[in-house]
Length: 521
Image (cartoon, rainbow, N blue to C red; front, side):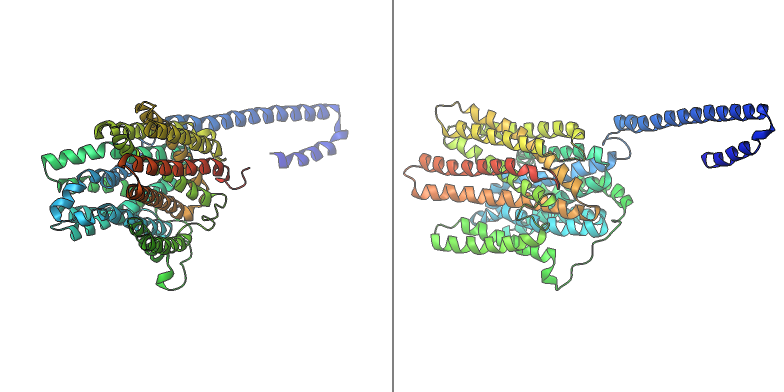
């Protein structure tokens, strides 16, 4: 051993007068020891190389669809797919439901009830995950979602149906927030980008095929089957996802409880956020300018005040790191979904396409979103541990190009109408790349005890973006229709304003992308 060599040298030195033979023997012994030392070092080097190569080989074989991740992977993807189906697919059969249950006068609340409850479920579940781990809040979220499905599917009147939709919304918010939290806690860093890509697919694919499936169920069975037939799948999703999450346990360091009265808690602020957003959306539907302004300002002020309390510190000022990641999610979803919501309207009203043909645009965007996210997930290893500002910024730019090309295809008669479909395919690819890269980078920077907060805040930003941009676009259409000289010109003016706004959001995101990571240039 190295620490014994000085003593050996001293002993040899003490015997130096004993004769040249002993000195030569000592030198020979030292040479043997050096040879042995070199051999041991070589062996250690070989072992080190083998140890380095073993994880690389393991990484090559590792997959989110293999043990020990397979059950959790399928559970998360199925959970996300179910809530996506209820969020998007039900829109197809909602007119029939409203007609049968006497809810045509309050039709919009069939969608708004789910969306506003989504805000509350997102905050409540994400904060609970930071304190207890994701298993219990996910179990509760799926249970509430199932109760909402059962209640909506058996409702005898519109108010009870809206109650079921509200409960569904609580579950949707919980599932979507906890999906990202579970991925960040249960998967190694090298697999997270792939899982985030799968979650994107788990949302976009049901959004693509959900309306058709819901219509078939309604025609062949009953509209009630759209809700009730999902219940066994909810049980299956829980059975797959919950056991692996329970084995994770709770967080190692639990955040300190918030002080103060109950009305100062994040959940109470999320209720205020939902109420303020609801008032804002209701105001946007009004035709009286004074009352519209009062409700929009009051609702907006309440929502912004509450938003400051339920998002990471520095979100409203786009502080570097996680706060900027939350803002990027808002800009992405505002630009993408704000454009997508009015693409079918433009193709049908301005370009004379059928509803089926207009749906091609939505399908093209959904497919390329999945492809873009999958590509980014496979290529993400080159960015791990450092800023993903480049793929995020490029994704925003591609989305911006897609919005411009799509708008030309909708608004300019001289361009073929399929230009809009091609444009939205471009936009979908940019969305997939930027969405996946921004989510991965944001969750990578969140500490273990703040994964739920980061995930929930991004989901919150997404829901708000969809709500606000859809409301603004709808208000633009209503305002233009009230003051336009003809229906076509009013729709064209409203869509021009809407697409201009969404393009500005995409451009802002491309500039903000460099702030996604703390310490990045």
